[in-house]
Length: 266
Ligand SMILES: C[S@@+](CC[C@H](N)C(=O)[O-])C[C@H]1O[C@@H](n2cnc3c(N)ncnc32)[C@H](O)[C@@H]1O
Image (tube, rainbow, N blue to C red; front, side, top):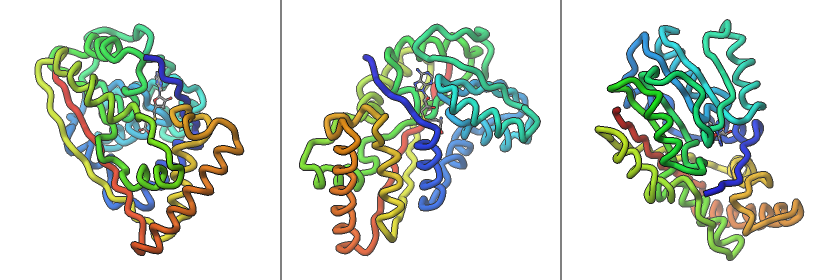
């Protein structure tokens, strides 16, 4: 399965910012609670983006941890590296395309995490097998992704505004169809956790910032709704009008993120 996906630094930063300003719960805190990390471990973060989870692990463990963050996007890696520099470079950030064999030490890591990233893999069993190979016996793989029911309001508004069906999103659909099952096949034990975080907007403006960052033109997942810049802007205008109608009806817009956290033990 080929997924044409390119995360831009700006889109990712905007969405992270909207979550922290309008969400009622902290997802990093939830991850740390379910992972119960011990000092001294070795962590590999795959699809690390600008390093959100790497820095969270590092601070939580008071620096007593070896962390390698990897991504295919050089611009996101550069952003992670500049934050890392402010801390004295305790984390290693390197290029890794998870569709290729992982050129990293085998049976080495206590934890491998892939947060909001694994569902972009072309071949899920291949990528998960590579992760399994790099874990020590008893090591854990942690993946997160959107679950069915995630951001229902967002999809309802887009559907009503455009009159078109929502294209299948790789996150929730691939967890149900492939990711969780492959984790169960490869690993000796797996567990699931669910995190719900309502984002509450009192005006349409932050909802539109999120929507633009989420659907922007370089995100090919939405190309059944728009192809050109002009079509993108027309879709945004229609979404804004529908969002305004929902806001007038309900007094606020509540978009609930529903995220699954999956821990598998080698
Ligand atoms: C939604 S972002 C999540 C980033 C980060 N984990 C976070 O939660 O902020 C998805 C990430 O997967 C990365 N990604 C997509 N395809 C990849 C590939 N083939 N190999 C490695 N990383 C990839 C993107 O560059 C992006 O950083």
